[in-house]
Image (cartoon, rainbow, N blue to C red):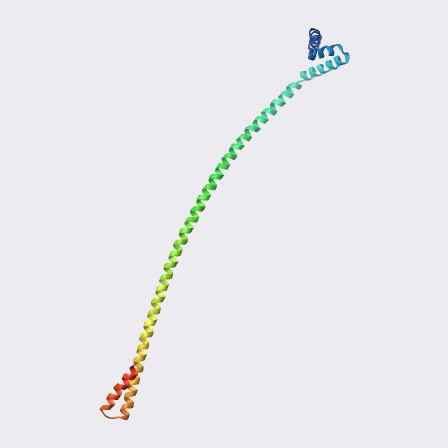
Length: 190
């Protein structure tokens, strides 16, 4: 089979240059390869090498490797697209969570402000109640002190009247004593 292919190739190389000898280019180069013995031997060696490589399956292996590589690249691209989609979904989820967290934080801040206002109002009410109780206690103390002071003044006046009456009684023994005692009481009370 190899001999048949080689002989066909040689025949094609021999006939083609003759038909297009005047044109030059690729055909002219083949003509030169057919006429120059060194180039012709190198060409035959190259063709023989390619035929041996084809017979041993080198082209199939190379093409299969390229197909495998292309298939792997295709799979990697699909994986990358899938990972990109997953990343986009994860990013969207993270953004939604961040927005939810912001909303929750705002709700917590608003609730804290309402709680602080309520605590402030309660503290004001408690303070007002304490102040009113203290004022009531102070008023009660003042009233007690006034009552005690009035009682003291009355006792002192009564004691002074009693002392004045004793003194007058011991010094005088008439109706003038009564009038003098009444004057002493008036002086002591005023």
